Image 1 (cartoon, helix red, strand yellow):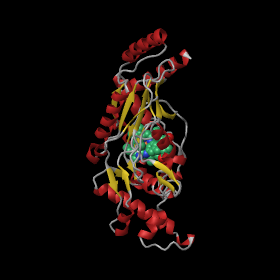
Image 2 (cartoon, protein in one colour):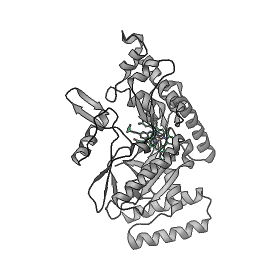
Image 3 (cartoon, helix red, strand yellow):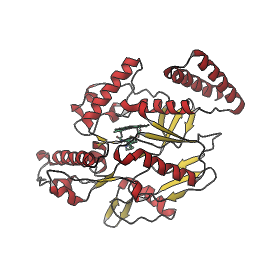
Image 4 (cartoon, helix red, strand yellow):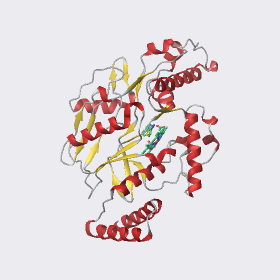
Length: 356
Ligand code: HEM
Ligand SMILES: N/C(=N/c1cccc(CO[C@@H]2CCNC2)c1)c1cccs1
C-alpha cells in the first residue's frame, strides 16, 4: 500500500517538475521530502504549485473530454483549508460567480481537502453545482427526469421546490463533523439563457431555457496517489449537450416534437426526418441564444477542430494522446468531424478524474 503511494508520488513529481522546467536537484530534494512525509505520516501534502499543475494534467488526461485544448488555462482554487459546511457553501458560491464572469466563462476547479486515513473531509451530493429539479406527478415528470432521485433526497432534508420545469436545486454539503445540509442558490448568481430562434418565432413560446455554467461536482480528482473526493470543476457547454441531449432525449426534457410543431415541421413519417430537422433547429437556437446573450459556448464543429489542435500540440510536445472515442464523437453529425474517422487509445493515465 505504502509502496504504491510512493510509486505514484514519484512518477507524478518526476513528470510534473519536468513539465514545470525544474532542475534535477529540485526534483531530487522534493522527492526526499515526500518520501520522508509518507514514511512518517502515511501520506503527503501537495504544494500549491503541484496541486495547480496536477489539476491541469488531470484535465489533459480526461479521455472523454473534447475540450482539452485549453487544459493549461484552468483556474485552480485551493480550498484545502475549508472544513465547515458554511465555508464550503461560500466557496462554491464564489466559484460560480468567478467562473460565470458575466458570461465570459472561466474554466475553474475548486479543490477541497483530500481523503486522509479513509476519512472524507468534505462531501458534495450534487451531480452538478447548477441543475434543475425533477418531480414525479400523476401527470408524469415535471422538470429534469435525471434529477428525480436527488430532488427527493433534497426534499427529505426539508428542501421544498416550487414545482416548475426549471427549479434550481440546492447545494447539499456534508463534512467529517457535520451531517448533510442544503443551501438554496440565490437566483441572481445563476446565469440562465432563454432559448429562442431568429427564424422560428414560435420557439420562444416553448419557454425553454438552460443554465450557463456546467459544473461537475461528483467526480474524484486523483493526483500522484492523493485522492480529492470533492473537486468541482466547470467549463463552458458544447451546444449539443443542451440541444441534442438535455432538452432532446426522451428520458430528459423530450422537446423535439414541440420544437417541430413550433417550427411548422410536419411530423408525418420517420422518413421525413422531422426529428433530425427539429434537432438541428434546436441546436441552432441554443448556439444563437447563448451567443446573443454573451455566454461562452462552442459548436461541435469548432470543438472538434480545437480537439484536433490539441492532438497536434500534444504530438509536438511528445506526449501520447489518450481518448474515449465513444464519448469524444458529438451526438449530432458525428461523421462530419475528424474524430469519428480516427482511433483513440483509451488507456487511463494519472493524474485524472474518476467516478466515485
Ligand atoms: C472548457 C470547455 C469544455 C468543454 C466544451 C468540454 C466538453 C466536454 C464534453 C462535451 C464532455 C462529454 C460530456 C457528456 O457527453 O455528457 C466532456 C467530458 C469531460 N470533461 Fe470536458 N469540457 C470542457 C472543460 C473541461 C474541464 C475544465 C474539465 C476539468 C478540469 C473537464 C473534464 C471533463 C471530464 C472529466 C469529462 C468526462 C466526464 C464523465 O466521465 O462523466 N472538461 N467535456
Ligand atoms: N461542458 C461540460 N460537459 C460535461 C463534462 C463532464 C460531464 C458532463 C455530464 O456528464 C453526465 C454523465 C454522463 N453524461 C452526462 C458534462 C463540462 C462540465 C464541466 C466542465 S466542462
